[in-house]
Length: 178
View 1 (tube, rainbow, N blue to C red):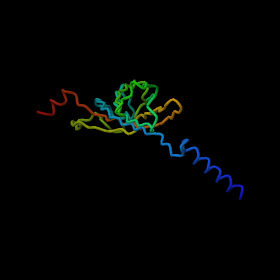
View 2: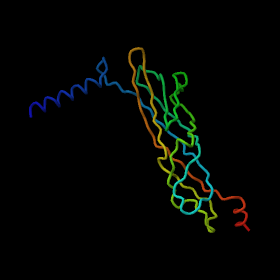
View 3: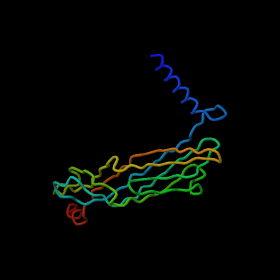
View 4: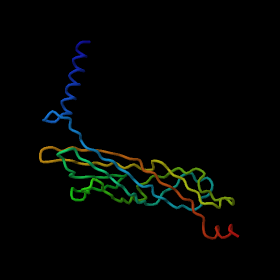
């Protein structure tokens, strides 16, 4: 029992020591936050019984806020969604700590989504409908902060939503407006 207590104490002390820099102050790694818009995909009426659908290529707009710890500067930033990646060098990262970027995700990198009962072609369905699908994709972001002596990697992730908009063909709209 005493051996277990010594082991736990040693781990706690080692953890505390690792969290302090040479001056004995807590070194904060910095922060990275990622916000994304929700793209809208227009789809036409579907036949009954089709529960899964493939989405087209989509553009996601990201706003990333990056803050490095005191004494460190942004060296690189990257975003990754499915097989699409974008890397930014230090000169591409905004000096105001907010960086905006748009990424196009090709349709083959997006799996089919379940949309049971949405936008079904029936005679009484004449209104536009919308449906937001949560977590269709996810983005992983990283920020490398550093100086001549140290570097620190910060990670963030976010789920990405998509809104489907059921569109009515023009001839169906004109037939119902008379």
